[in-house]
Every structure is written in structure tokens, then in C-alpha cells.
Image (cartoon, rainbow, N blue to C red):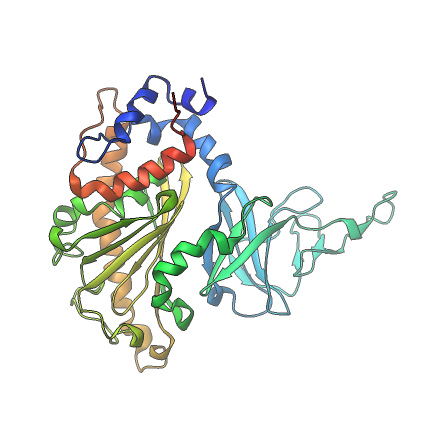
Length: 383
């Protein structure tokens, strides 16, 4: 038995039903979302191998600007160097492994708060107090462990795996599908961070679950949505392009500052979405691009980071800072509407009485995302 299939136990045979055409298919067994062993395997097989979006270039605009985070307990430090390049490192001192920095800020050099070892913005050791007596100690061989970095349309991506494909290959389909949004001509206007009590995959699936929109979001995202307007196009690795009618992400149903100049030919209700697996879900309207990046904090806990981009031309408008808050308020409402349902879903999947139910045709997108994940973690075997 394949070691991955062994993670599912008796539930492994149910995956064949998930892979059937959507009109015949069932949802995945609960263990996919509740098994500690599967969650542990996802770190090794997905998050330590894939390209992951960690923010916008504007967030570290000046030399010395940095942001520190943890990805499934892996400390990460991203910093803008003096030459304008963006570097990423494992955020662990070469001496004892203490994290060099926390949060965000600006530093001319990176100094460990434990024993004072200091590194430049390229991650090389430039100071190690009281180490002259250490025999054969060569500071030139000490540095913060580098992590691969790629920049795309103003986004920063990292990859822990030195053997992973080049980012240009990884992002090629997304570029082809969504290049017209011109994210390089936008800036970060609003960033909201929320946490929900569910497995990270449930968040990613929920973002393409059009079945729930008219129920959970009937006064927000679902107020204009009709099933007949939904068009779904699958892409490799669980990716997709979806088009539908939801309209601007504001309570007024109107853009705050007007349309993006390059989308003037789109209807006011223009809405599109796509996924770059594993956790970068891109949404766009006639005025904004607002990706959701979903991070696992634990088996039953996830962080959702929503980045709202607006065309750069709007940022000099009077009262911009006050008026842009309309987007933050709307995004928070959407997450709040989902949070209780997702927590309840997580609880139900953990029940000993749960049996995967049949899928509806409108869940085609959910099934595609799920099957992309299953093919990655539990590849179908051929007789």
C-alpha cells in the first residue's frame, strides 16, 4: 500500500467516488481535513515545495525594509537590500537558531537578539562577538540560509525547495489568464488579516463554492449572483478561471474611485477569479484586484490575508485613505459571514457519523480544486 494512501485508512476507497464526473461524485472523506498525519504530510509535499505568495513589493519598498513570518513553523524573513533586490532567508541565526527579526520594520543590518550575531541585507555574517577564540571559525562560511525568491506583477513569491521548477513555469498559466488585470500598475490599498477555525483546504474550496453564495452571502457577494452567469474553466493542478456576476466589493455596489482604466470595456458586474495552487486565490472586479492568500496555522485553524489592489492613479485623490476603508469593511463582512459556517463544517467533518454527500453540478469548481489536491497527495493508481 502506498504510504500516502495509508494515511486515509478505510477512507482511501472513497476517493474513487470523489473523482467521478460531478453529476455522479461525492465529496471527500472527512479525514482529508481532520487527520493530523495528512496535515503533517502536506507541509512536506506542498508547502515546502511550492511557490508561495508572501506579500507585495510595496510592503518592503525601501532598503532595509523587512517582514518576518512563519509558514507552518518555518521562520521566514524577506528583506529589501540596498540594490533594490528582494532577498529571503530562513529566519534562523547561524549560531543557535534564534529568529533574527519579528513582524515588520526597517534595519540597516540584521542582528540576532540573543547573542548579537549580525548579518547584512544579503544574509552574510558581518559580526560575531567573542568568536575570535573559536578555532577554525570562519565568518565567511556563516550566513542566513537563503530561500528562493521570485517577483511577479508586484507580488513576492518564495520557495523553500531548491529543486522546484522556475517560477516563470509555475505562474505561466495564471499570467496567460489574468495578465489583462495589469496588477503591476496597481498598488496595495488595503490588507486585512483574519483567522478562522477550519482546515486551510476548506477556505480554498469555499472561495470557488458558488453553491453557498446565495445563502451565506445573500446580502453581499450573492446579491447579484445568478447560476446562469457562472462560467468555469479548469486549469492544471487544480487551478481555474471563473467568471460570474457579483459586482464591486462594496456595500454600495459601486466602485469607490471608478473603473480600472484597462477594464472600461467590462460590464459593471464583471467578476472573475482564479487559483494558483496551493493557496493564492485571485479575485477581480472592474475596480479592484483582491487576492486571498490562505495559510494553515494548524489542523483546524487558518489565516486569511486579503490584499486589495487599486490602480496607482487613484492614490493621490483627496480623502483616499478614508474612502478606501469601504473595501476593508466589505471584505471583513464576507469573512465574518463565512467564519461560522466553516467552523461548523470542520466540526461536522470530524464526526464519526459523517458520510460524504453527493455533489451538485454547481460544485464543479470545488471538485476540480479538490481533485487537484488529491492527485498531488493521493495519486490515482492504474490497474
